[in-house]
Amino acid sequence: MNLWEYSYKNVKLIDIDGKEWVGYCIGYTQALDNDNNIASITVTTSEGGICFYENEIKSIEEIKDDKKNNNQKRF
Image 1: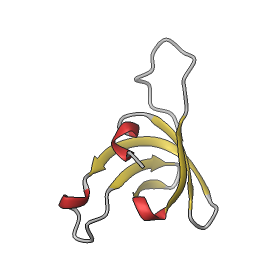
Image 2 (image 1 turned 30 degrees about the vertical axis):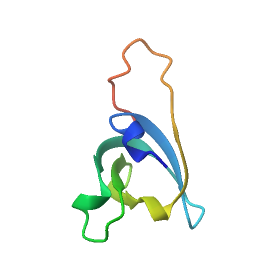
Image 3 (image 1 turned 90 degrees about the vertical axis):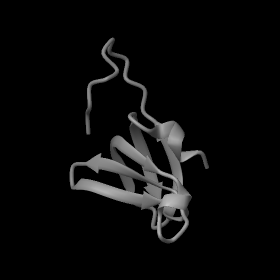
């Protein structure tokens, strides 16, 4: 899984428990920079910022915004 591809994009993520999360990916941390050696992303959701490690993600996809201004954050 190439998590860095989702940085600064709107995403829909399903975690390993089957819960769906929708938000804006505000950052990527490579495995070497995490104590557990697992890459992660941070997603701003309606419940706040949440860090998801790669092994906690069942699936992730970018949510395309049809509007001209793709830099607008929505969640």
